[in-house]
Image (tube, rainbow, N blue to C red; front, side, top):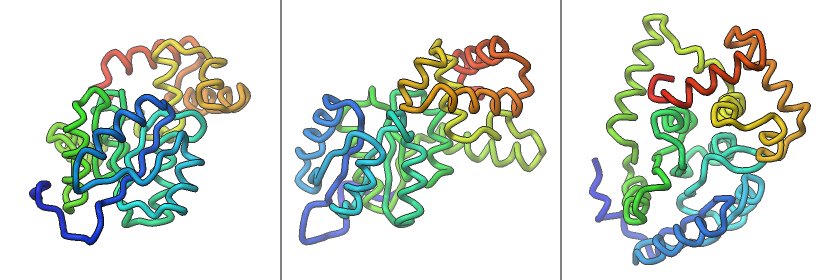
Length: 227
């Protein structure tokens, strides 16, 4: 593990782009980051589309992005960023249990994952750890990824693993009691698109009705460490 208190020397502070669809969260995180003399928030963005434009314009040294945002999700944004610049470090932060989302973030190329309930200093430490060349995932998440890879080798892949990130996100929203209309509004997509995703989820998980899907999703959310 790298010593995050000793970052590689550069002539300026490391420039951080913060992407989150909640203004208060963006401001709070930005204030914590700006308190560190080695770091500086170079910009903020409220969604994935704005984030992509900001990355192209500002050329940050690291991106800190929320996972659940309106429109394209943070996981989809992460894949876009990695396609544009594979070397750009990205740390994801989320209100969701790390055991559910962190593995997907890691597989998509994230270098770290921080819970939103974490203290601001933990966010800063994660950023500095990644900038120093390390990663910022808990040991639990790292072990889960290794277990998952071993499980795949034995042919015991979780059914959830075959869902796309968007399908996975919609499954989670159903599990939290959201209706199709509410999901469409939250993700800024049409009800028809939600219906298409719902159909694909049911097909992949061999569920035969929306009620079965909702029950399955609720069980996943209540026991997400086993997804």
